Length: 421
Image 1 (cartoon, rainbow, N blue to C red):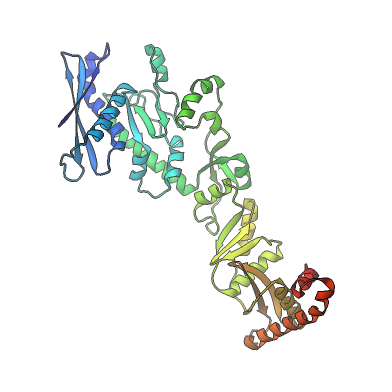
Image 2: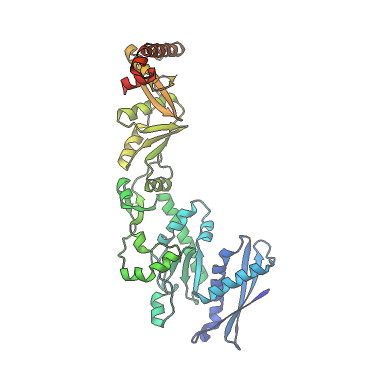
């Protein structure tokens, strides 16, 4: 046991409830202190009322979570904990803390921490005001409890949100531990549901382009309240309501796992102005040929392939759905791939294929290399001999163009590319 040498004088009118409030005071201190301790350490705080001094006095032990063995405190560690308890017992002493980091750990780490913390302010449930002092609404009050007369304090003693979590003032005579656990469970379940449904915070422009529906009510911002607490919040890194009004809570009205396997990640990328959508495509070059041919026939030219991913430029939901329908192809036919040393080779291969009516020509970028693909009309052709035939034609055409290169001051490749561009 480490006596902390800390006490708090009870205010006038508190003496009658000093004994019944002691367990709640300890509960508050534990919730506020717990986030500052190592994961394998639990605080064990004892408090008692000293009638001679009219003070609550506290003692602390730190126990190992698995063995209940007491952990020795170094002098700096002891001082840090003493300072924190002084803060807890002097600033908002009736407010227990639901710490965002601990809440996130309890959720199972299945979703990104940044998403969890962003959604915290939108996930608060409503409970019976008999259990919580000041009814807690879906959007929390950011106004900190202040000193003043009882009426003013009652008006402002609402639950509030800070960067480290949610502060709640419970009725000490209620089953506050159960309510605390119920609130934690409710918040976790709601944020997990948000994540599954692709709920994000974004602006109306993104929502319009990507068919998102608002699920929160737009707030009316009162300037006098903003002026009163705005500076206080900004100093603590908390957005004010006025700053948050431009972005609201939205969820998609659609699901497409082809290009949005994780709806939250996909929509957040749109908020960050990512222009390309990504599809997983097979290594089968017949199917790749048909996918690229479909895109090019419909006017989609800004795309490329990286490994097994096809990235296509799309600015809105309707375009993305059109692209999605074009990448759904079956394997039919046979293709021949040719090495393309430059764009001029692609042009010449296409020229020769059209002359001989060998098949359908396309080209695309794959891992920064140009791929020429010919879907053969005759699937029984000898592709080894045919590929040599194509290569010979391209080389001969470039040799013929060499005669003009000195006259035009251009390389043979540049002349061919200019001819077809």
